[in-house]
Image (cartoon, rainbow, N blue to C red; front, side, top):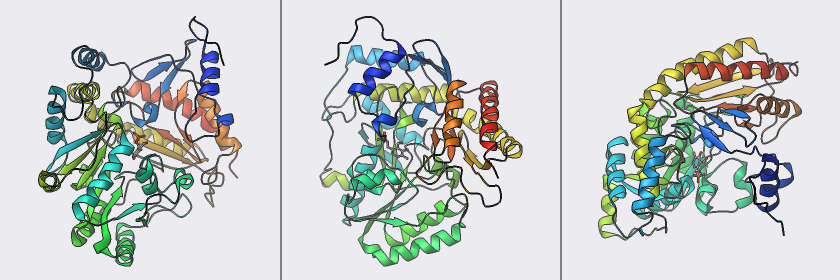
Length: 443
Ligand SMILES: Cc1ncc(COP(=O)(O)O)c(C=O)c1O
């Protein structure tokens, strides 16, 4: 047993107790080294001892409107005082307003929503809806993907986080990726669509309920599909009666400079899952949106799905207030505008640093891939691994007060959408210095 002191905990004590009594995700516990966080405002957060960090990953690519927005805080407070909870069989004011608002924002004729606690459950229900609606059972997904940590979502996930959950959900198969890592590069839309159709033929299109994709792949590399890919995938789905499921958990709510990433290609998916930016993580909430025709199916047929916290009033209130912030502050436009500045900054890094092998961004969704050999483009850390150089870079960022995700041979540039040009420049000054470390490793 541990005795918890009554006085305020220091950062060190917080870390010690968290490490002793709680589990950190996706990690061997002996290896974790969390930053103690006490408070946050705008694009910054602070440790209990007052060290300031610029949050260059919006925590987990989710605090899109920035930290500590009083408009959202007040909405949550007011909702807590009025009605903190009502069970999912009840109809509430905030649930009504949020459903109607999302119907306005989501593409095409998507206008009915099932609310969940987060992204994984949104995808879990998307898979279930696709199966119930189509009467088929198979689900196609790509390797370079992450769809969440619950049974179905982790089976659909292609990245190594899936491995420990295998064999997982029967009926999930892989469709081809269009990116094959920094050394092998990209396929054209025509190539990848040809291969995709071949896989569909082999699986038997009449057995396939849905195909789930991140329209812009998130943690697996900020992969923007080649032009024509999303449109081509839509066509293939139409040809074979397969539902297209867009996982917009990370790419939705302005991250790419549009409300939803599919809008870049004017594609209307059949199902769209969302979470993260929906409430900017002030309260946990996810949702799966469906086109009218699918919603109609559930007029007569039972919707076999439920959660105690479905349509949680606090979360719905947080989402409504968050959406109002995007609108009032023009944050989607800001992401688009500053996305151009981010592109310039990323390109400048590539010109200045030998270790920068590639950079990509769409809106304020960006990534840098590092290499140790400019000719062979060998990544600076192996697939699913790390290296002393990547670790040194992460350490430098932390020391200098820049928080971002450092993963394999990459690091991310995903600030809150309210960031200013001056704040972006400040962060890039730290990155610029940090890359001097990785440049030393280049042959
Ligand atoms: C694209 C995508 N889908 C689904 C999820 C899972 O969401 P959650 O962690 O809220 O369950 C994530 C989380 O990072 C994600 O990036």
